[in-house]
Amino acid sequence: MLKSVGGTALDSQFWRAYENCLIKQQIKPQYFKWYLSWCQQFVHFIGALPLADCQPEHVSAFLDNLRASAAFKDWQLSQARSALWHLFRDHLQIDWAVGESALRKTSAAPEKPTAQNLSKAHQATLQKLRSNLIGRLYAKRTISAYLDWATRFLGHYPHRKISELDANSVKAYLTSLVEDHNVAVNTQKQALNALVFLFQESEEIPLDDFSDFIRARKPIKVPTVLAREEVTALLAELASPFSLICNLLYGSGMRLMEVIRLRIQDVDFAQQQILVRDGKGRKDRVTMLPECCRAPLKEQVASARAAHAADLKRNYGEVWLPTALHKKYPGAARDWRWQYVFPATRVSVDPESGKVRRHHFDDSAVQRVVREAALSIGLSKRVTPHTLRHSFATHLLEAGYDIRTVQELLGHADVSTTMIYTHVLNKPGVAVRSPVDF
Image (cartoon, rainbow, N blue to C red; front, side, top):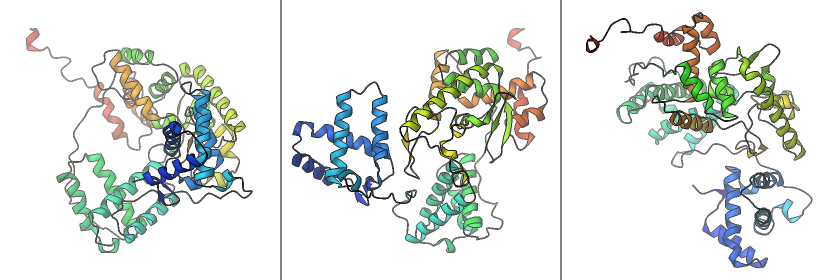
């Protein structure tokens, strides 16, 4: 689907009209492709935000990112600024660009796009679902996942309204996920949770008992755990800030997103502990702050504060706040205590509000670096950041710590989940000699 500006698709005709503006401004034709390239990079930068809703701060943020990169020269920065100036002033004729005193106000946050083949009734159902999820304070990723499953489900029944669907429809769809698409058990569970919320919470349609659908088979797996020397070698291979992130994963048992989303105020150096807010299951918990992480974490916090101070000078500095905290505490978004401990290296445009913000560190970057480090030191096991959490739990149990204590540190609701790590305490076959060694 083509990007749009106020509802108009950015097709080849749009860019030809932009070239005509460049001709009128007497820009040399040999520069056209570069001007087009800068504008298209900017369109990619703003994401879902329509061009018509852009403000000067979005242009400034884009240029600041270019300025922060050593790959771009001053003349390239000047050329990019000129390209965007002609785009907004001469082609789109945006008020703030042509010099009018009243700036055009931004529109409401763009909604998550739905499948184009869905009926208006289905689109209204999705909008209602989204409002209910936000009202119940669900996490952004959960909202996105539930909307995606609801879209797929409604697309499975394109000619029937939600009021015409029932438990049998849900059962048939969940069964088709296994029979036709061979999905994993957790994938089917997520679809089930999304559809139960859609019917029973959003539409208030009771589903009763429909547990007789075909379920994906859950394989019995033992978590991958590294030996202590393997963990040491892996952590030694990592550079900052990946080294600190992974030391926290192994040293405190936090999940990757819990570390990445850590706020400065949640690190208590005096009590030597970390408050994990809104973890899995929307629960808070307290875990330990490893002594070896104390000094580098203080340096990281200082670095995050410095980046925040620089953002404030450039009229950025607002961080995303959960739920309605931005209304309850209007100044909290610019308070350094609410900033991420591991901020992103560049500012970006929030796809919901359209504001320029510095989000948290990219979790995919950590996953990639850990995978590369494991290959570099010759580990034959499949290693991910979550492997360090598995290793944390296993090594604590090996050291004789109570399983209930480990359960609390990991944030497991049921001790049976923690019990999977006791496999290291029951080493089958260790006391038996193989006949080949007789």
